[in-house]
Image 1 (cartoon, rainbow, N blue to C red):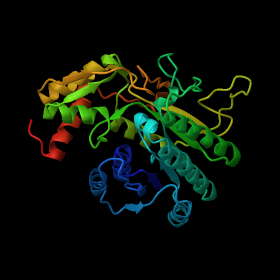
Image 2 (cartoon, one colour; image 1 turned 120 degrees about the vertical axis):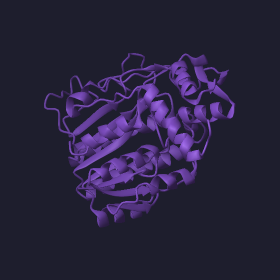
Image 3 (tube, helix red, strand yellow; image 1 turned 180 degrees about the vertical axis):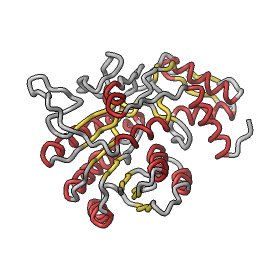
Image 4 (cartoon, rainbow, N blue to C red; image 1 turned 180 degrees about the horizontal axis):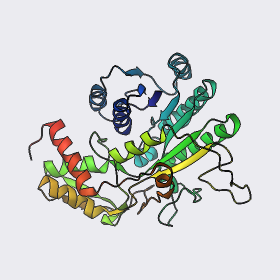
Length: 336
């Protein structure tokens, strides 16, 4: 089977591509290699995908003609859309980047999928769509009408757009709400990367909401395993769906939403302590208020995921943080 992955040079995309290549899928990778963060890190990720079953295109999702030509030439059976402008906080500073990448880019993927008879479209959503919800754990069957950032709003928009195409054109679409993904090859703008770097270098770290935060940290290998199991399980219509009591997580159309989280929230201070223990140094903490667009707690209900693929994320923080620090030390040639 031939699978097209957008954002293949990204954190999750590169890890997923490696896993699918190991499973003997053919992988077509798309990425624009933008400079939102280190281009050299993205290029390094691509290097470990040097496989005869992998082919890479440098392209912007906003370029509809280029996207169409790639779909027509490669004829992928499954599309996994991971390309996006990421980051809650950056969306407050640069909102237009999110509309171009996350909205215009996604409609181009939907249109290309529509015109090229795709068997299954999987796309990245985000736990940020839960916004002002405070009912924990977050369920895919909850209403998500109160996003707190433009990033979250674009991810909810992706889910709505996907549903429209599932309904109109019978395209099976599966949306994945990722919960605070971390691990080797992670992004430099993510908390684990910044905390590890600054603790090693003896620099302060910013601890938001004065440390009173809970996150359902999810190790990247668990994300990748979940996606790989969903590849050949296209979304199916829910025969019990009712317009009188509409379920947001399913549909009369071939449309499904899953949470992918560890189902085990960790206090931010415990997360920092795990880094300190692995690095062997104490953090210099700069306590800060809760940032605009942020939420104090996330917690994934993964019952649907476990029921459908017989797997749920389970890597504990100590092991996951340890693997990240080992990678960081090796990649950057740091001595602890």
